[in-house]
Length: 161
Length: 161
Image: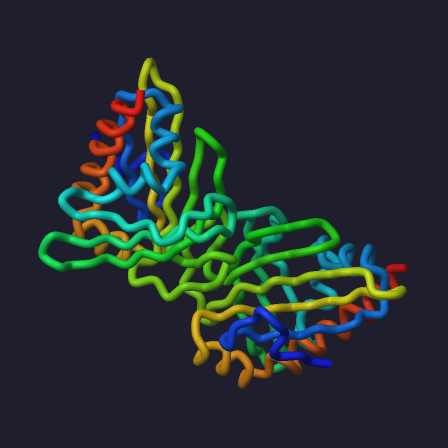
């Protein structure tokens, strides 16, 4: 299901492409509302707290995750581009108001959604500043983690219908 | 002429505010065309080569400067926001297409222009990730450097009229 090397993507990027079996309007709905997003955003049983969700260019996007063993993951960032039902770009490089961040994991994520049959072609392209950061992200479990979240998004979007 | 602490600015920011004695339309014109920008962008006798200038959100903005003694300054980045004749936001944190950078000097600059009498109130707010980076930028000669560039911008815009 993963396709790490589509045309036009650089060697320091990671890509997941999936056919999500839910209508694009519902996939978008699950993404664009922080009360819904937190239900599928991180692999369960971890839970997501959405600390900021200002979904417009330069708006803060800040999630904080907690695991059952007390582990946490602190992820401030901002939205760069928002095209309703089509495209979301966000980054860990900047905070709300375009303020420079000091990211523990530097990346920009481009999420695209397109109709495909009765489902949604969902592509997440995650760009890193260099190959070492990409490899670190992959070793942290990128494909498993983002794959699980897309599974959760799919199941959640289906029950919104 | 400098005002390092206007309301709403954080301690890790640097700010220059100036009344530029040229109409806002000409100040904008001098900024928005790379062939004109390169004439005033860095303190002379250094010269600017504009390697990319895609003036829209996510578009590359890349300047490379050379000094008479062989020194160089390599400054890739991207535009974040462009409101014609009013506001320009650019950063060293990202490259064209929102790709994460590895900046030697992490910052986001917000340039604002407003009419004031027959001139232009020109404010450059430069945000850094922390106080240490701000202080380094100031010690590198931020106020003198940016101040000289605004002098050059003013003189250049006046002769466009």
